[in-house]
Image 1 (tube, helix red, strand yellow):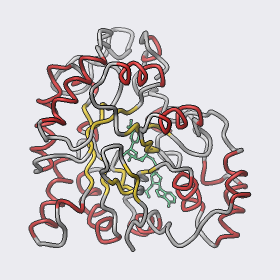
Image 2 (cartoon, helix red, strand yellow):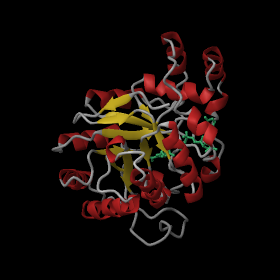
Image 3 (cartoon, helix red, strand yellow):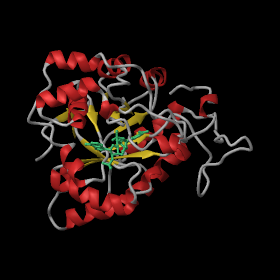
Image 4 (cartoon, protein in one colour):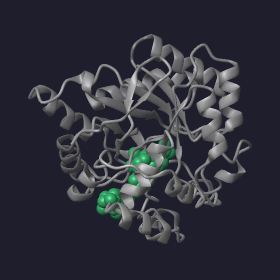
Length: 317
Ligand SMILES: NC(=O)c1ccc[n+]([C@@H]2O[C@H](COP(=O)([O-])OP(=O)(O)OC[C@H]3O[C@@H](n4cnc5c(N)ncnc54)[C@H](OP(=O)(O)O)[C@@H]3O)[C@@H](O)[C@H]2O)c1
């Protein structure tokens, strides 16, 4: 059961529209789940140094490649420049570190994870005496992007893009770049559809990837607050019943039909398979309209795990 839908990137490269998310998955979980995902047909894998699992992902992929079960060209590997690396002088160093951990010569897409910078230290991010995250407020997006362009020119990343950048920040990069961002990865789901930002990206040839497409169940313990449960929405449930599909499948298919790629995470074998089984049905236009109407501008992943982030001069991102 392979992913049968691709997103065309501006340079003609193809990115499988459905990818495999790996945040909050331990090494042990990711080893098992990634094997399940590759068997199920996932070829687009999303990771980041801050997920602390690039080494295990690299190990599993190497096993598949060495066994001849996959070729590198079939894979679409995405990783990100971490918040403690968002300085022009650090881009190559952090990308090379990710490549070493992933045991690869290039990634298919390298994203700037966040538009802000925290000090580079060994261990957890620094907090001040008020228990707020220590920020460097001098992030230079233009210089940073030039360094991203350089790693693309050097062949270390086939495509470069952004994550969690707002429209103003993206426009500033577009106005000053040689190579436009190929992709923007943002939170996107029925309660946070961000239609203006998505339209802006599409009109500029920037593909959009939705993270937390299922509402990031379990994030409440990190955020220390309740979050809405997308999987319990009655409108989605009714459409799912009608289509004989799961609520998660309808949520994911809704994104794909909006032209947005998505990267659900699961470490449960059954749900890993369920989340890619999206290509034998279609949500009809009237139901798409009902799902579109559920937008409430509710952000779940609001960076609450970076206390004090709202004091950053460029917040909200
Ligand atoms: N760029 C960024 O800043 C950023 C931020 C957040 C996330 N991401 C990326 O996006 C990926 C996805 O986002 P996410 O992990 O926040 O959340 P998500 O994919 O919306 O939700 C994951 C949660 O949903 C559960 N789940 C998965 N499939 C399910 C199904 N079919 N039915 C019911 N529950 C299901 C999972 O539990 P089980 O594992 O038990 O199935 C897990 O707890 C991440 O893993 C990461 O790769 C990027």
